[in-house]
Amino acid sequence: MSIEIANESGVEVDTDAILAVARHALEEMGVNPLAELSILLVDIDYMTELNHRWMGSDGPTDVLAFPMDEGSVDHGPGEAGTGEPALLGDIVLAPEVAAKQAVAAEHTAADELHLLTVHGVLHLLGYDHAEPDEEREMFALQARLLQSWRSGRRTG
Image (cartoon, rainbow, N blue to C red):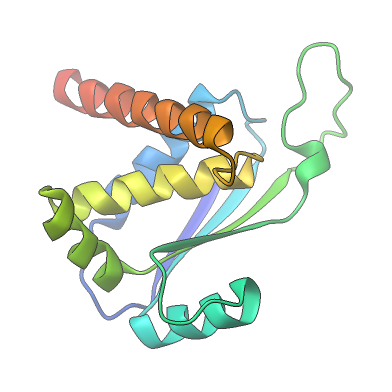
């Protein structure tokens, strides 16, 4: 997996942990090991601009996912892959928004960023939460991936 991360938020975060949870989610979801992902951490102003431009919403949001190459994400054993790296897309995170949400959720800002990273990965893989059934499926999967990553960190 090739995962690029850039922190342009002005907030100090553990980018190694964000990379690790993203890698874990992709591996657990069976994503092509040649897949490429980009993670960008931005400040509130830039996230507000992106949220308005791409989602038509006012104010900042916590995470945005921009899928790139949905057709080549998952090549199972019966599918012929091109051998080319799959460009999954970009995940954009706003650490300041995550920190505020973490207080409300009564966990750390790091925990919130890990959750949002997994959330973004699932969006890139085609999951959504617009409908109640989709939301239940996506959030259950998100919780399972976070739990397996956290338990792996404690034993590893």
